[in-house]
Image (tube, rainbow, N blue to C red; front, side, top):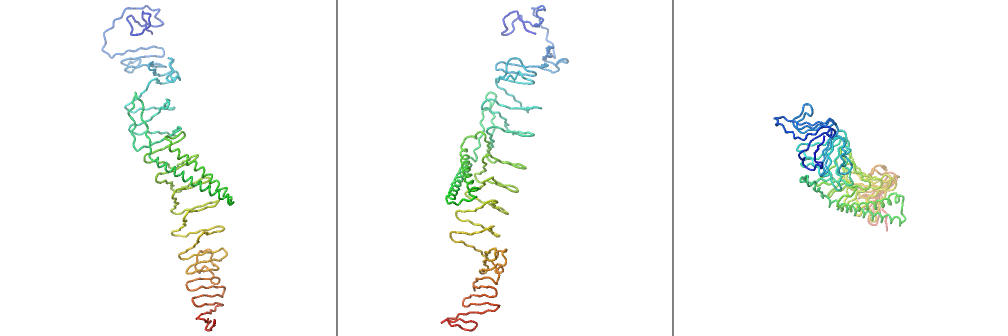
Amino acid sequence: MTIGVDDPEPLLGPLPPGTYVTDPDMGMLAETEYDVVSGGAPTGGPNRYTLHVPYDSTTLSLGKGSTSWIKDDGFTAITDKHVHLHTRTPQTMLLMGGPTQHGWTGPNGANNPGANRGYMVVTEGRAWQEARGHQVLLSKESDAVLRSAGASKRAIVQADQGDVDVLAKSRVFAIAPTVTIVAPAAYAPATEFNYATGWTAELPEVTAGEWQSKVAAWFDVLLSAHDLVKAGAATVKTFKAGESTPETYTTDLPKYLLDAVDFATAFGEASSLWKPEPGAGQFKVAAEAEATMQAGSKVTVWAGSSASFGGGRNTGVGGGLSTSVKAAVWASVGAAYVGVKGLRKVEILSEYGPAAVKAKTTLELISEHGDAKISAKKVGQLVADGGAFVFGKTEFACMSGDGWGIGGNGGLTLGKVTNTTALSGGAGSFDSSNCMKFTDSEISAYRGSAGYALRDNKVSLFSNGKVGELLIEGSQIKVDGARICLG
């Protein structure tokens, strides 16, 4: 069907008088009637206008639904394959069914309208879809995509007064060169954007903990520099003195190199904190109050270069059963004050090399309620440039594996030890026939059945169970009643 007019000029405005409707294929065969047919009297309704074209089962129905064509009331249209509505300013097209051959290739020139298989709305202008009730975007068997293709533009999911949930049965991915998760103490989502302005709000920034992290980072730099200088000086001194050992090459030198790497890493990390935004390949989590990471099974934090845990006031690493700090080469704990505490047991062990406990001023090894033992497989030494002291409030003992020792318990005993496994200075640990004893009242020595004892003014001699005494009175010595004159 087409619209014709006697005037051969193109139709540029309202249809003029004399316009008629004719079939494009039958117009030349049928006689043209120019008389205007007068309209009949309006009917009382219900009214319906149905236009049906057999090709593609194209049917348009206006008004009351039909019992034989389209049963729904209102404005309805049905075709077998294709429906589209198109405006040219701005270019906008609504398509249903199959593709269009109208010629417009869409906003990006990809000719999506020409590939339509279902439903499509494309426009060179803006788009706005709004509902007072709930709104669902659902793909039953394929992907659902929310995308922004403009340079420096955002794809935004926002709940003005509620929550945003991202749920998946399998996995959730958040991928970008820079990922930032921010939790401010308070935040009101922007609601002033509309169809004309779009989204113009700024995202919040959390600055809590920034200065603490910077101070901690630069303190780490100072500690790393201190370790580097000390380790370097000690290593150079060892080589200059010709005192290098296998441990120098396997432990000290690699430790010095690691100190250099630690210093460079700490300096780089501290410098990066002054950048206004995280760089590419960085992930940032910031919270105004508290950030928590929990897992029912395991939490893993791994970095290919370095990983840091810090707090402006304190930092804790804890485990319900055990906590380990491990490294393939070197693990250290450094601070102005360092404490290692165990409620039941503390163990410091070097399985395949030396272990050293050092202090610049005072070093104390204290057992408050039990024993304190220092043992060595080969040689044990107590060395001091000044004085060296061994003090036992009740007793002390020094013993060798071949059965000789010195002990103190109400006196001092030197001699043959009868029990080398019991570190006791009591007289019961020594052979009474092979020792020397020092007490407040006497000094005595025993060898077999013989011996002597020195007291304030006399000497006792022992031999084969008999005792003799030497008593000095003035210039005379009395031996069992006999006197020896000294001059």
